[in-house]
View 1: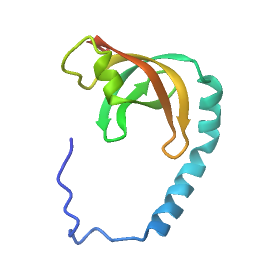
View 2: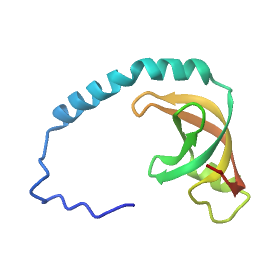
View 3: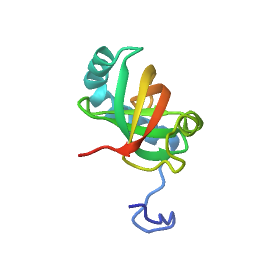
View 4: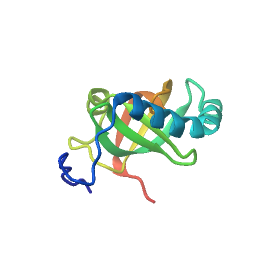
Length: 121
């Protein structure tokens, strides 16, 4: 659940962009072997079935079960190809791998189709 984040909270410490990038790169470098393997098992053109995890400014974040992967799809494309007027978390989405976001380690999804049924966990 989202909560308010007060930037003046005493437990928060402001860091420089360089420090953020340094830590970000350390964390991402630890995930690099899994990222390389993921691109091998989900090559361009692969059709995936997943479910909507969350809506971010970058797009619709999709969990891809069986791969421990996240994909990102264009919100407008999802809305245009949705069987339901009100898209929400856990709806099943079918799409195609069209690229890779190496900054966030997301699979970029194209041709998304949002179904009118929820993923059963």
